[in-house]
Length: 84
Image (cartoon, rainbow, N blue to C red; front, side, top):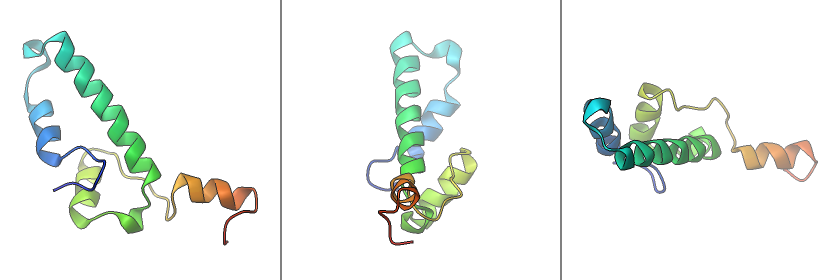
C-alpha cells in the first residue's frame, strides 16, 4: 500500500518488469510522468510522515529523501517563517 498521492508499489514493479521494447509510446510517457510525480511527492513528504511500506519502496527506488521536514518547511525556516 502506498501513501496518499504516491504511486503504488505494485504499479512501480509492473512498470519496471515490463521490457521497454514491449511498451508503447503512451506507456513510456505515462511511466515518465508518474515517476516524476512520485519523485516530487517523495521529496515534499517528510520522512516522518511516510509509512514503513512507503519508506521501504522509496529506498528501493532511490526515491528517499534525507530531510526531516518537507521542502516547504525548510523554505519557511530559511526566510524566518518556520518554527525552527
